[in-house]
Amino acid sequence: MKPVRAALLALLLGAIAAPAQAACRQALALGLDVSGSVDAREYRLQMGGLAQALNSAAVRAALLEQPETPVEILVYEWSGPEDNVTLVPWTRISTAAALDSVIATLGTVERRSDATPGTALGVAMMRGAQHLAQRSTCWRKTLDISGDGKSNLGPRPRSVKPQLADAGITINALVIGADDPATGDVRQIEIAELSAYFRAEVILGPDAFIETALGFEDYAAAMEAKLLRELGGLVLSRR
Image 1 (cartoon, rainbow, N blue to C red):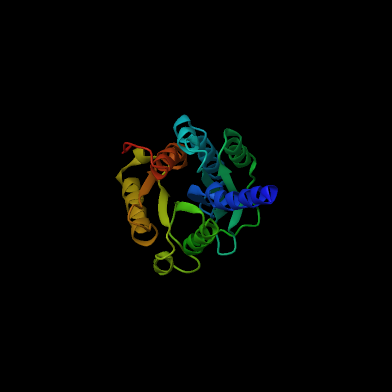
Image 2 (cartoon, rainbow, N blue to C red):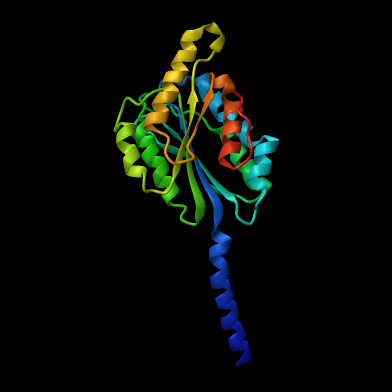
């Protein structure tokens, strides 16, 4: 009987331990805007900027500090209503090798030639929420939407936002503005208006926030600041 009891005890302990092993402290879905307003150069700056931010010493430390309850990351790109494509599937960042794999994938992604040029921001929000719904064991669920313009196709973000209010997710935004803020006050006004739009129609949750990038050249630095804030690190405002 002793071997049988030992086997039963092992099965019981395994059943108890399994949920703890599957848990993660945060699910982070990153949605990248690849609509018609984003040209080939800006596409590469966005993909490379995310890779650079993930590879920064501060973000690497934040991601890898609790390998027993890791962060899980998914990256998808969005434009028109039918153009939401997963670039990096859900990946548990429990080792440096797992993080390096995500960074390497972002470096090899090629822009699709068949994507429609529209900006279906509401659909992108719903798709991000669907991705996060798959991570039931994660303690926090965060959708990180990047965008350089207002929605012009599909359901409006203001219509989608109330539907997601009970999903238990936070939606933050990285608003990409003028390439060269030194050319005048008009461009500063433009990014302020776009930030106000994202604040009213997109971000969701008591701790939700907006980070701004003054053009795609500033994307990597803005994304790094945003990730550190989302991952719980102390980040002093760059602006």
